[in-house]
Length: 44
View (spheres, helix red, strand yellow):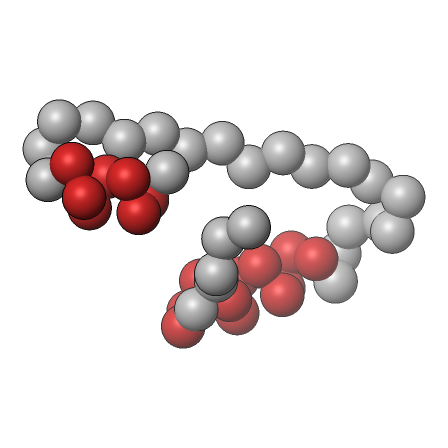
């Protein structure tokens, strides 16, 4: 599970208050070769 911090937490809180409790959402992300393997592992 991801840890959401700072302004990102405020954004997620804002959105979550507007989504119906029975809704289902999926958040997708990816890494690329621009960071170190350790950094990209932490992102994924």
